[in-house]
Length: 359
Image 1 (cartoon, helix red, strand yellow):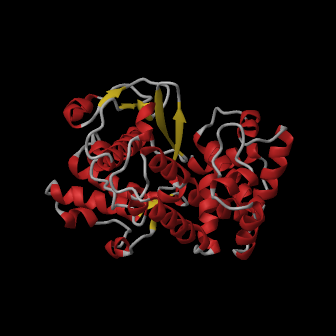
Image 2: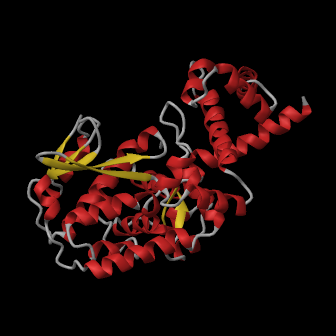
Image 3: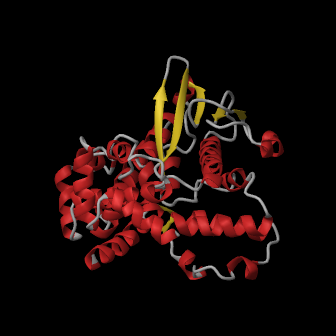
């Protein structure tokens, strides 16, 4: 049993790293929190006290920070102000076109709103890896839906969606010259009490909808961008692709893959899907992962292990059978065999081990 204990402890660290640690946001998101805190008159010495984050880490340009770092800054802001209510709106309205360089320049060079949104959707996982965007065109309306590729703490669910939709609306409105009739924000949760304070600052908002999205008349997709330049747009697209994909180290590609390996409740995206989302061929992705000393299957196993240990710990009533289906295994025995291979214990024994440890 000695080896089992070593495996349990070693894999627990993998679980903690992959649950949120591999999810990243642009460093500017952290700077926005700090600027907001300073504007609110918070004592910055109190803000940084006890945080295991060096302020110098925020000085590195054009980089990504673990979402856990962002959450720590948000948690500290909440602790000092007493509430997270409305913070998503506050920060979302502070996100500007120049927040994500060179993305802002690429968006400014697109000829129409349609190209702007398509560019943002195509590269959304590279611009802000914790979010995924999708453009849908209907007969009367177009919509940009926003989804999270990780599960935040329950208290921060609304915060992340408030921030994302507000930021997207503001950025697109700025591109259109501050005039955008007919646009609305839809949220899939009930209207929060703090919304009243921001009602006049936001466009029309609807709550208890089927998804989180920005919706507007479809003909507006053809609206011209005053700064649009098709030649520059193509040049920026090539530079963006090279900067965020071709120029990345294999280790960074590994982190991108980890961000994609999120179960939808019926398994994880396969190699073909992930490579398509990262805008590269399967062969290229395999080569990058091999150069980093890993493989897609190994990263998939890490994601499954991380989620399995988390669910075994946090969902004591969830059956092993349901977990197997959630992870995409065809049979419960296949899941059990895989988990035993990773940890040396069956899922049931692992759950018992956690319960004994907690007690």
